[in-house]
Image 1 (cartoon, rainbow, N blue to C red):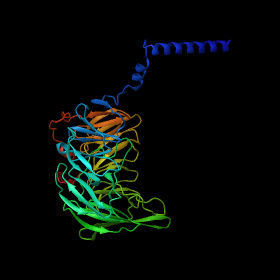
Image 2 (spheres, rainbow, N blue to C red):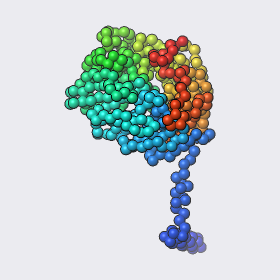
Image 3 (cartoon, helix red, strand yellow):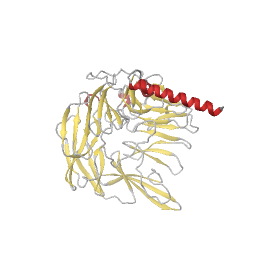
Length: 467
């Protein structure tokens, strides 16, 4: 009896399929477009809903604010969308893109892989402002654009441009770099930012060009003074040491093995004067793992600070310029994020995120969170706290801890601007406005000035000194 019932059901299914095929083939009824539309329909990125949500042609490689536009880099194309509505402004068949400048002075630099040269585009119109046919590498900053041209492998020149400039501000020789660097923002000898899974690295946009940059040149290091536009030092690093150029200093990390552990010495020199300015013994910058002491990692930090661990196991933030300890954690405290002005810390117990202004002993503000694994990042205009149990995204003012946005979402924070942030998941992106800020301007309009209290730190020229 059971076999008969099963056979009967199979017959009905076959008959239904035959009828469905006949209906579709005769254009009488076709349910498949509706089913596909239902399956592929966009789901809200957050609760409450974002200000606007757009589905992209593919998952983005990067997203960056550029004045009144949002620049989206795909694997084989680049597009810009208006901040106010998310509507597409333009699209180009390019392989990579980066943003230089800030606000209305922003430009989009685009190029193709395995092809020399780049184009500088207007973020709103996509029109070409300047074309280069020879560059093999480009770096983008809030106040400058750098490129490298090579006549051959041993004859290269590094040039600095204003983001919207038509002529180089300066040019210096950079020999031997032609086959090492390529495309946009290749890695230099600098500190790496602390990262978290729920916030894209570089979400705060381009940083200011550092006063000194260290370039790997054919097994050596060439240090360039970006303010004066001149080479200040060439040296050949010891293969057992780690070198970075941070905060106007050349930082050398020595590591030696003994007694089953590693012993570290951190030495900072002024490259222009060729002399040592500070050193720390027994500070571990986490450049090596294991008793072998082979250094394979750059130290973490910001443009002017580095992060280390003291001999008694406490985390510390050091001023790269003069070696001062700007923040020293207690036992059980965990440093989550740092820039040149603030350190975000999880106290022992993991029930909060606490902010310290570097150089001050008292906490500036604290945000309670029950998720001890919540991701935390500083993205210039906002501190992002992203708990995962349940999934949320909270944006806070770096200066005061005031809530700028609070929503339930499993999306990733892709970019943060002065008036809001872009979040995304797979092919969907959306704009989350910050409370208490002016709404995003329409394309072509003049945006409201950014809150000057959200500057990067005491060494930035437009910022006040740490109090």
